[in-house]
Length: 357
Image (cartoon, rainbow, N blue to C red):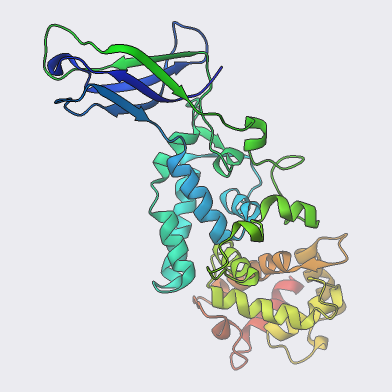
């Protein structure tokens, strides 16, 4: 089995030369069914005696992989953006939904920031072309590992054919000159090509340096004269996109989280969690929350068995709590400062009522 990536043949008389053509392959046998690998057109031959066409598999998906990995800060985080539920496959509607979220993020970013430029690069690539390139078997779903692979998926088969749809005007027939050559390019092992994660789709960021090196671009592969976005900035972008918040809001919540994280471990204890609530919701004192309410809120955020809570877990809790509370107040506020304005003193009271209920 092989992958045909180009075709070459001699041209004869202009009127009987091929015009529109398709290169097809069959996974089963020489009788089909046949699937299209790519199509091409032969320009009016004129005085030419030779024709050659080479196809670049994964042209759009490779651009998409590069752009979304750069925006998210790595392929692991790009996977989490494409599949928030942890699934390892995605359909066209789900891919279009990712594009819609990116468009909303672009509106929040404005038109001049580096993040806006990266999002615009992604949105310039038609998702239907991306999906078509990766959905080789026409199943209506593509593997995210294929979508984020260094080399996109390519059809591999024993049976290939050239289908000529029409010529340049002759009613007598269609002809090409010998020899007809099918060109192939050597690719690395397909098993190495696909991005995969031990045990299925990723659930959290890689913890070990080895795991991070698998999915983060190495310093040697990046031009030294191109300024790279700070890892924290990329993280904030991803969180803002994932939770439908502005980058400013995420950054402000993160700053408060880091202030109470006394050992800078990236995780907070139950007591630090309570201190963070006091800061964010402008309560007068920890005593405003009874011990039972503190326990209830901690279970909501971290679960009954957890002793620590990371920022992503807290942000998910924070978004859920503030959206419920602002909805109960009958108003929508986009800025974090407006949601925690101490002059209102509403969120703290509402949070206590919600915890007590």
